[in-house]
Image (cartoon, rainbow, N blue to C red):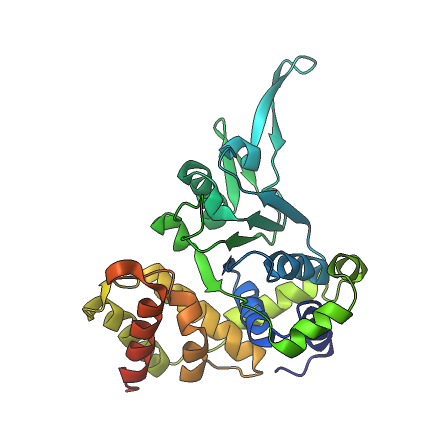
Length: 306
């Protein structure tokens, strides 16, 4: 990893809070450095909320959590205009989406209408209400948690919204050593309350600017286009990757290369972020998650470098 004391302290703090998940934490940092939104899909109780809160505290970003339920309305999320007699006009009251980190907890328990209310915020970094546009705080990141679709009371996310998430990750169960550390260590709530900001806003902005400036050669772009094109031609998938997905892959690969301390993007960067950036954007016959992952891995293995 890049030899930067500030980055090292950030890395240490996150790994001490969410124990036993260094690979997931690394990809989470890649996602945020690339300016993307993150979807965490897993069973309840494995640390998804803890990871989101630890990130917000470590970066010093304003945090807001919304528990998505079947009766949650778009106005509960975005805000509402209320008539103020003293001012003789409607005044917009911002909702919880007006934060730098929005934790959309169990997003697939809300109705499709409420899920879709996030689209403008995620894509345009703004909320429109009564003909007025309200910019969101910067940076703005949605970290959504999602239960497996086979659980009771869940609704599949619209494909248009899935495409707005740069990555989908899963924490999974901890190994035995990590779980023992959880059982014998400090309570997670107390630990979160003690976390300190590790990165200034100006330094984070500088890091992101460096990520965006990383060189991607023509050969690397050819390889990326070949991978994307392979998803559109294979019979193993019902639909391939969109141009937005290709851009997401490049952003994530740049962020991973920067995290590794390089000033250029290499094919291995694409390989590391490949599944996290693509598996939620494509469909396979039967929509079996393992079938999708296997198909994407096969494409990665059989797409040659030029």
